[in-house]
Every structure is written in structure tokens, then in C-alpha cells.
Length: 138
Image 1 (cartoon, rainbow, N blue to C red):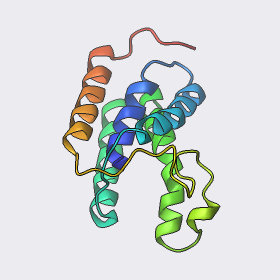
Image 2: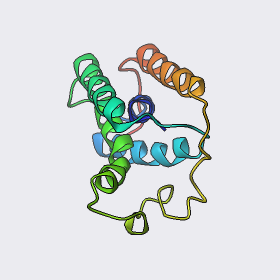
Image 3: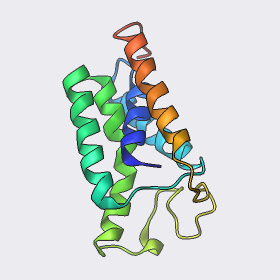
Image 4: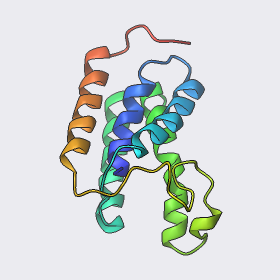
């Protein structure tokens, strides 16, 4: 899943919580769920600026101290493993996140499908916009 999409989903999930720690944890869980969907990632040269822009947008929109931003951070945090692997600091066998393990059984198959990710990201941000700061779980 594209990092920016993970961030959008995490912001959406985070919007359901008052507690930022819970929002962060829910964001991590959302990463696993999203990884199961068949997808194709962009090259890291495209992914990194897109992710930074998405996080910046969520921070400007909801604030860095918001459950939405915490959910977004939680959702992208498992991909730190991918970054470490790309720069050669860890091997695939050293990855620990369930959808990142070397056998890839839990990870969605690679596909040329990117439209589904755009739809998921858009729906996530619309949910955040509609929900606003309404009632949340603790």
C-alpha cells in the first residue's frame, strides 16, 4: 500500500478516538488490514515526497497533536522496516511486522491496481472531514 494511503487510512481510524495513544495503536492495526489488499507501490523516490506532503496536510488540517495525526503516524510506522530494507540496514528475514515477513503470506499480492488506493484514500479523508471533532471512543 502506498504510504500516503496508509496515512489517510490512519487519520480516518484515528478520528474515532479521543486518546492519541489509542489512535496511534489503531493506526498500526490499520496498516496490517490495508496491506492485505492487492496493491502496487510507487518507487521510493515518488513515495517519500508524497508521504511527507500527506502528513503535512493532515498536520495542517487537524494539528500534530490530534488523534488523526497520531493515527496517520501509527499507520505509516510499520513501513520503517521497508525503509531500513531499502537502504540495506536490515534484510527481509529480519522484518517483524506480520504483513512484511519474508514469506509474504499475509501481504496482499502485487497488482497494477492503483485506483483502489486512490478511492480508499479519498473515502478516508472524506470520513475525517464529515466526522470532524465529533464524539470519539476513549
